[in-house]
Amino acid sequence: MTERYADRRSAGIALAKRLARYRGREAVVLGLPRGGLPVAAELAEALDLPLDIVLVRKIGVPGNPELALAAVAGPEGRTLALNRELATAFGLDARGIEDLAVPQRAELARRRQLWLGASAGAGLAGKIAILVDDGMATGATMRAAIAAVREQAPAQVVVAVPVAASDAVAALRGIVDQVVCLSRPEPFIAVGAHYARFPQVSDLEVRDILDAAASRVPRVRPAERDRN
Image (cartoon, helix red, strand yellow):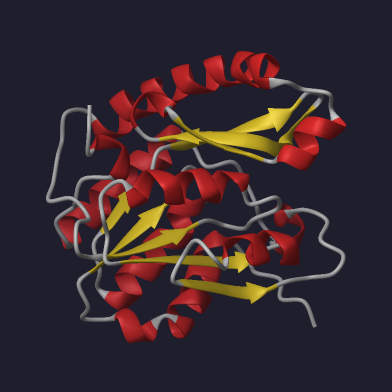
């Protein structure tokens, strides 16, 4: 039976039960904004771990922005993960993909300033990085986040999501240390179909989540601020 969550926070609580082994470890929970932040916040609080973010931005296919053709992450959005099958299907070459990436890099810069400002922290070197999103369809956004996080040399990289397409999970098996996915429905329709409530997460909510987490456990520096 396919799991359906009341909202993102309830999904985070469910994930925490599967990740209890990381309580008390040198680990950091990294949410993928915006939708991954409420999930990650509940997971981090349940396991008493610090919470931070990986700035990553999906590049949707023309005419269907929710379907991830690629994603950019890292400083200035220079890390790019591409779904090559979709690029071929839509007839997009490297120049076409770069044209689509330009406005997403600009949005990353806006979010970085709005959410993070000039704050910095200890980084992820030698720690367990737990990357959390509210779900994965193609996995392109998560792959970009993983590449950005790897630049900080964490001891391990763990991906945790409530729901995902089976092929998206399979594509991560060789590039992370562990993938925790609570539900892999077949056929996979959309992430939002597995939540009773799935509203957009606002900039203000992201800021509030980060502030609340910082008051509980000191934040660390996100992956994209490791190098400038």
